[in-house]
Length: 239
Image (cartoon, rainbow, N blue to C red; front, side):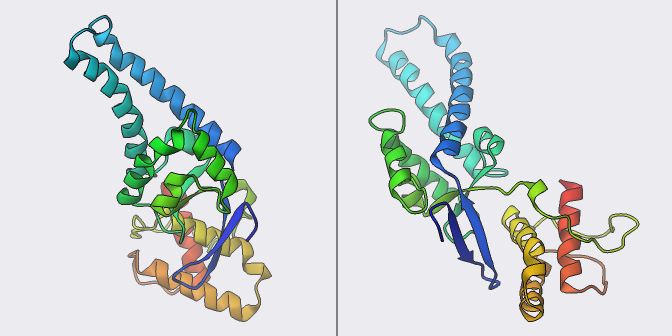
């Protein structure tokens, strides 16, 4: 493992290499998110313009932007693709250090510690921590047990050889297949030609077996690699 990569072993026994996000890409994503939050805050605060004075109103004026800031990050890290708009644009994703999806508890911890990472201003403590940790983690990442990874570019992955289909097969339910599963399948398909025959067969079988547990489809005879290729093709076709 070098300074910008982490290699993990999946429960299926396949070594998956993740590219860690550096300070530059994380800062760019944070700037995009901050600009979005600022724009929304301005709109939200317009009705309260010039209404300061009472203690309650002053508390509301202070609490609204803070709640928006933390609510924005917490919401995007717990729903959908678990990416804020800034991270999605920069192709960054938060995952646990074992490669599994980061859940709601991890997102909550990560964003609570964001207060410390932001100190004394502009994420200074967070930037120092990213520089000084081997997995480019700020304090919130360390507390939550997560890392920020860069999603691979699709164009960089060699186009796999698909099974001979006239059309995308019907009756397949692949909705339970996660983004992490997709990354694992892509990694295998891009590296399989470099594996010896025995390793290729064993790893392909383990991945296909794990994926089969998450999908349903009509009875069909396929090799492990054909199953992986088919599921990946279906996920791409259905977005």
